[in-house]
Image (cartoon, rainbow, N blue to C red; front, side, top):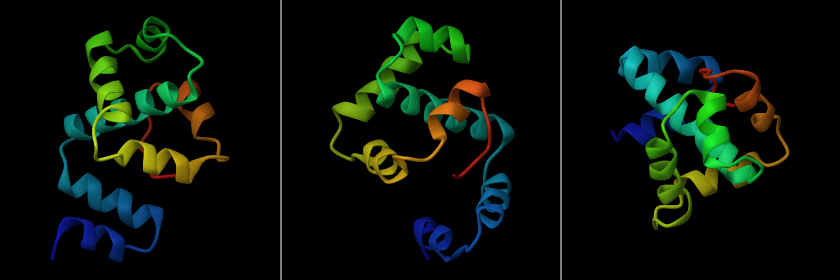
Length: 104
């Protein structure tokens, strides 16, 4: 079974969160949370790279890397997820907390 299939079989956010906590180290989770928070802020297009770097305590190099995958790579994974989440409170969560482990 592929990893994506296993994730799709999980039914609640808590099940997914627990699975990811078992699958990854705390450092890996932090790195993914960091990239996701950056992607959300970049997608909103209200802050500069420097403002995002300051708000999230991340490097502009990391922001540039996320921006490349957000806008220039053909996978469109960030864009697909962000478009599906439009209308939720994910922007506010990214700004209110430095990092958070949340699937929603």
